[in-house]
Figure 1 (cartoon, rainbow, N blue to C red):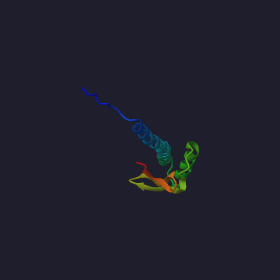
Figure 2 (cartoon, rainbow, N blue to C red):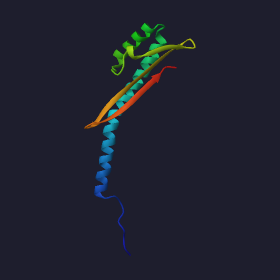
Figure 3 (cartoon, rainbow, N blue to C red):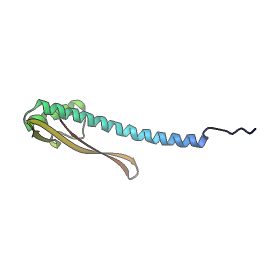
Figure 4 (cartoon, rainbow, N blue to C red):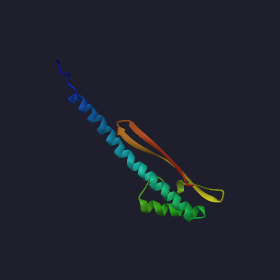
Length: 114
């Protein structure tokens, strides 16, 4: 009776390792941009709740920006409006992540307070 070998070859392990390593490097660069987006969204929400005028809201956002250490946008980049007597703050921005050579990963973020 003949026995068949099972399992994965060394070359297969190396290829899987390369794919996992590349995915890990990309994820390590994407996760901080998402965490920055979450901080911006929270800062916009707090700013919308704390101020009544456009100037107050932008100033509150800039104070949160300094405290939370994000650089993607500032208070000038916010679009502030009123909807049904509620202040709504909207923003949108892009982050570019350099991969290799001329290749970039572009992350587009946009948010709106409730």
